[in-house]
Length: 242
Image (cartoon, rainbow, N blue to C red):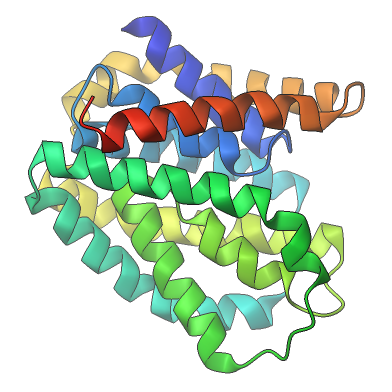
């Protein structure tokens, strides 16, 4: 079990280091649900993500576009509330299938990533609110909020890579902070379990460094293909009730 927690922390670090985008984080809950319940898995990942957010924000400080943050965050609050309520009340077997569905969605999003960037698109404010709400909901329910958010951001004209990463980093840092009170109140985040795995925290900055190191030396697509393959298998296994 300790190895699974360590691997989850490494995946979070790799993602925050830029390797594989949001895909490694999407793998953490399905991976941890092999050894603990889905609510426990989602809850225990949150403090690790928040620790990683602090590290990532130092790399992209003030590199974000606040107009998107102001547009998407209010709707994300509602999404977080609904997602937390369902996470705390639905049976674990159903949650495993829902997590499998969200994981499969992450695979589909990643495969459609390049096509999204090439689409002609006229942005509307409600598109952003919808994306923010879905991102908050997916993040609270399964830590898979990135597909909705990044799909919307990829369609924005004139978005530079640095602003894209900076805005994404700030948005999910805010969303993760919003999740904390509800997770603690509902018991989704169990402090006693967190204290048992706090030793994995140093693996996260190691993963960030490793991600930044590897991305400069190998084709990131190789890593993405491997993780996408694992995500696909894991999502099918969860949906089928494995």
